[in-house]
Structures are given as structure tokens and as C-alpha cells.
Image (tube, rainbow, N blue to C red; front, side, top):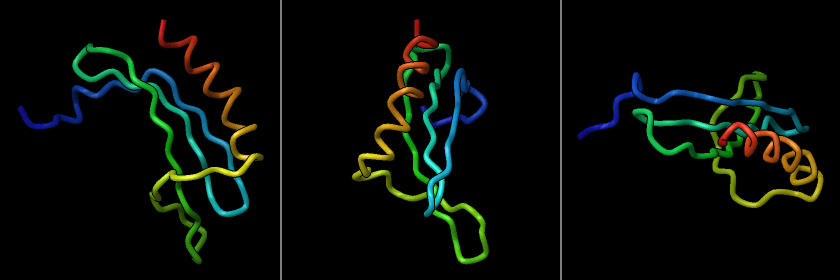
Length: 78
């Protein structure tokens, strides 16, 4: 069965900006299934727009900012 974006429900989402872009923590449920946390990075372009980027490694400051959001997201997964 191919992916259907209409079945993907966002239950939680919060972001914070850093110098180079934005990091987001979200919780999704696909087709009323298991709730899953998603961590994403968006890099800022020269025009000031955001473009999806691989999360990869994070700095200490980024991790310290993400942890409270991840803890809040975990509560939404109950």
C-alpha cells in the first residue's frame, strides 16, 4: 500500500530556531497506528527561506533545546 498523506495525522509539533535554521520535534500517527516521534532540521537558505536538511549530528546547545520538547512530545504519545 503506497503512502497516503491524508492518513498521516500530526498529533504534536514544536520548533525552535537556531542560527542556521530550525529544528522541530513532532509526533505522528499513520492510519490511527502507533504514535512515532520525528526530529527534523530545516536549513536557512540565502533568501531566508527554510529547506529540509538531514538532522545528523546536533550541537550541545541544539540537544539542550530539543530535550524539553522531546519530553513534552513523549507525554503526547500516551
